[in-house]
Length: 333
Ligand code: ATP
Ligand code: LTN
Image (tube, rainbow, N blue to C red; front, side):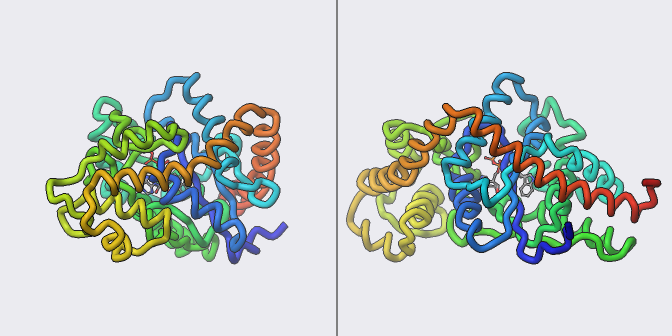
């Protein structure tokens, strides 16, 4: 099989670090689902990435299966699109080590996510947290992927991937394809509902800051009603109005309406009406996903069947890339 035949390949991954949020959905998952028609997609649950932060084994296993079921519920169709589990394909760990040796300490020190996470998890700044972008570079490069749909926070990691790939290609000749981040125009950066200058994150200690995709309609309504705004009581997209801007961004990403249209829709209406409406469109968007999730999560055999066949496809492609890399570096095969 020729792995170079991947002109239109798209690759992406999400960590099973908890129940995915509305930010994950609008910034990443929704794009994956749409892209299945147009691109040659491969998607992955990045479980090796998740252990950069200490996990409780039982919860971790549950999160992996739930995240998998949720992606099926969102519309990933494994008959067409392999959706595999990273730790099942050993080539990821193997290429990560090799690429570590082609990545500079200085480059990794500049990664904003590392800086943020090493503050957040100050008592466990482990080497995995530091080297995580190299593992991610390997994920992308193994599949010779051109397009990488991610939220804005991952752009820097895709750029690092290009640098490492270019460096390797310069030494050993064309091996890797240089990937491009594929960032949605709306929804690329959904912010916390409680601290709208920070991105919405599933690992936020304050559950009011995020909408989990499986939150019930009641909870979603409550969280939006509590969302931090300002004292102007005017639905307007403007610098300094982070909370309102965020809610407008969410509303726009779901309804397809422009910011101007939203401003006139809520002209003269208070934040109460606006927040209720945003909550309602989010509830309706998530409702069919929540219903399908219930079916998938109760069918563990089907989930296993989906990831096993996907693992096999991924393994075949990834092993071939690792072999090529090892041969070029000078290992004896
Ligand atoms: P964690 O809280 O564990 O760091 P996370 O919620 O940031 O996780 P990831 O699993 O790291 O989510 O990200 C999965 C995908 O979702 C990535 O493509 C990422 O860019 C995107 N994403 C994450 N958070 C947001 C957000 N708030 N807005 C838009 N896209 C997001
Ligand atoms: N680092 C990403 C998840 C991730 C990823 C990847 C995304 C792991 N490997 C490869 C795109 C391509 C994150 O935390 N959001």
